[in-house]
Image 1 (cartoon, rainbow, N blue to C red):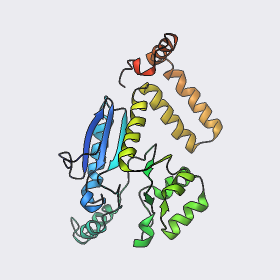
Image 2: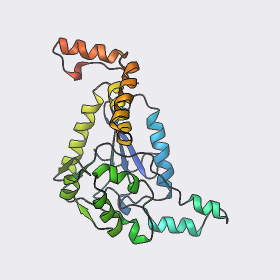
Image 3: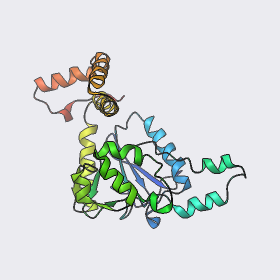
Image 4: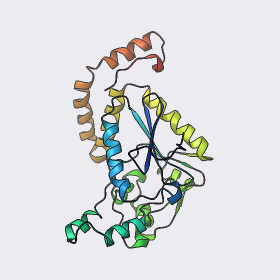
Length: 252
């Protein structure tokens, strides 16, 4: 599943492929640098996912890293070099190089048995600034554990990551991991894109709102989305004892 041919032009840090129908595979591709995130990565990440968001054929994205390491985090040497050689000499330009945001967060997280996770920014004199401190408490549901990880920069290994909900499945090696990830991606991709998008939007809304607000939002959402032909197709398929794979759902 991983790309061995290097980054996909015009990208220099990402490899993009389509290994299955309606599935796009985006791979961090700096294995010689443990897929550390250099300056070009941030703009390429935005460009890549902006392109994917405009692709009606894409319903699921599998995001992985080339080589043995998913990512070692920020490329410190590249970041320091950029700060020492700014495009200009004013504070605004220097500050802009520190303003980085990940534009996406993974909905489903998988790892191998030998994987470990670390909030490393503390050890280099920074507060984590790409969503870790904001998303992690909602992902694992334990403020105490988040505080411990963020304030000690200790490693969390696979078993602990699964037990606290950071990942949902642990695989013995990368080969089985990628096979498992692709299996999940295909299972999502064959289903109604209207239903998948609606489910994701309502899950995210429920995460940030009360149960009552979430129920009201879901009711309002379905008032319009129940008018989709996907409902009729799904019901008809069920009556005819057909599987979801046999239903030809239209792209969004």
